[in-house]
Figure (cartoon, rainbow, N blue to C red):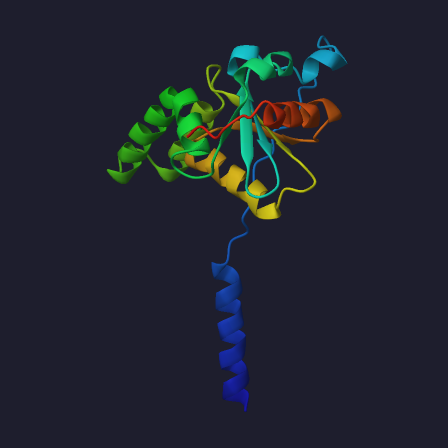
Length: 184
């Protein structure tokens, strides 16, 4: 009986010491006092991409400011020929740098800690896009997870999940009324 207890104690001690906590980094807003409240959340228009998640696995996107959305809004699909292709086109430099860095890590030229640090710098670069993800109430949770997966696959470091506002809902309805079609 004592032997069994010792084995169990040893087993649980070993298991708890092997499991490491996993964390996710969160970027907090700047505490700079010189920035006005309305300027804190502004994104450079040339780097802004808004992804809109709708019902029935439908996804729309537009680039730039919401005021220009009627001109640039398109419907696409999930996967390699849809959202991923669009994100890769907008984030090609960061993806190439990340791939080069990954190759260096695989060849043991860069340590894992240094790799993580440099990858974060690449993802947070000044020329990388900022993606705003908005989901309708009718969109599925799976769609949101798929969109977040695409952010990781495409090395997008700056993205935010935002509330769907009435103006954006109207953009989708206008797009559908004009007979917008899917573009891969």
